[in-house]
Image (cartoon, rainbow, N blue to C red; front, side):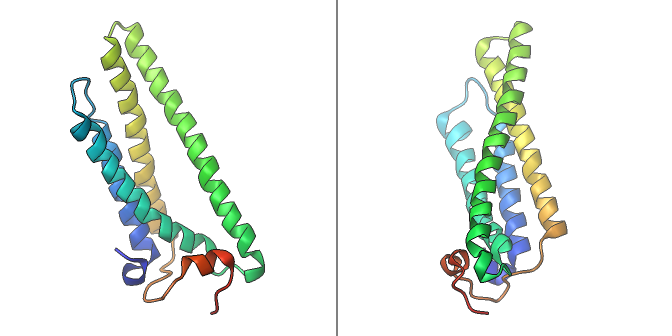
Length: 161
């Protein structure tokens, strides 16, 4: 789905919902699962969702930024994604660890305890992706529909209106 055909909002929401579905799929992990069914397939779904979200995020962050500030806006976008990813991973890891330890202390076998911990983290991540879809619905404008957008020019600030 392209931003040109559907607009920033619809593409962003679609990507977030696809990523949420993949993350929810990960909650079904089991100690006896398969690599293909429990890891590779949901990873592919999450990856597609994230890939779809990159373009509308960039467009939303950099559109209407004055050319003199486009470098700063692009850098802020990149730093925000890196810091957000690091903080998100820290929170999800803490949740997974807490659940794993609780299960281990309750006498649950190690493999099942670990899978339970990961399941909690993936459920939280899926919920956050659903929240991202709702936020995109509420806050994103209909930028990009029926427009040609060159992301390289947009990031470099060398675009003409």
